[in-house]
Amino acid sequence: MQKIALITGASAGFGKVAAEKLVQKGWKVIGTARRKERLEELQNKLGKDNFYPIAFDIRDISAIDQAVDSLPQNWQNVELLINNAGLALGLEKAPDCNLDKWLTMIDTNVRGLVAMTKKILPKMVAKNSGHIINISSIAGNYPYPGSNVYGASKAFVTQFSLNLRADLIGTAVRVSNVEPGLTDGTEFSDVRFDWDSNRARNVYKGVMGQNMTAEDIAEIIVWIAEQPAHININRIEIMPVAQSFAGMTVAKNT
Image (cartoon, rainbow, N blue to C red; front, top):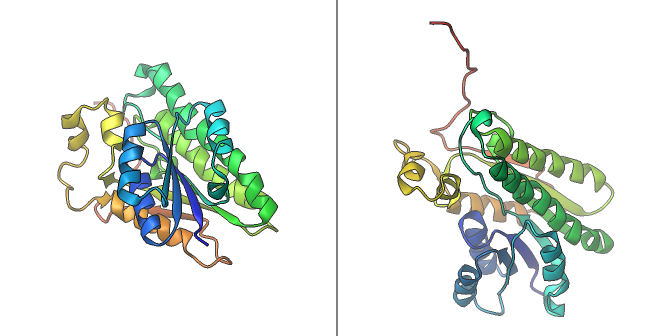
């Protein structure tokens, strides 16, 4: 019997590539995202028997309930939940930030992820089988100017993942947290900078060919999912060789 994965944010980036790789390995995938046409394109590529699209905004909690409750009977036994939907908006320092952008990041990266987890998790516990993979970021581990709410939201994802695992001790349900660094081949920077392509591409200036790609991260996600059932990858932090830890900043009088 084919195992079923549910991936949020499946219309692009990590989610899209992970869906493709899982289908190649024999999984059936439910893909959620806001852009219905992107999901339909992916379904046409992967096949209706292999990919089931559901279009809604992860910030809408009632839409999560409706989407999951409306799954056909043969798509309801979700074995793997990949909480991939998330975004950063802007790189301004806190005093100059737009509050609506802050709240959008919280609603997407935190509330949506938590709500989807709460919707799927009880069934995993009831059958004593399942795996949740949350996509966090190194921004949740290391602060940098302009990260503010984005970094805080990803720190929440990391800690939520670890606490979920603590709550699930004694069950066979697994929880993993993936923390990528500089990665191209996604829409992350485009969204962050309001689709200013020049500014988005400047993020990778000088490291093109050395940064990670969506393919790299999706490969790791699938590797985690296909570990033996008695192994739990608690968390995995990944950076390209070209990236490392920033030094501490000191403000000096000049």
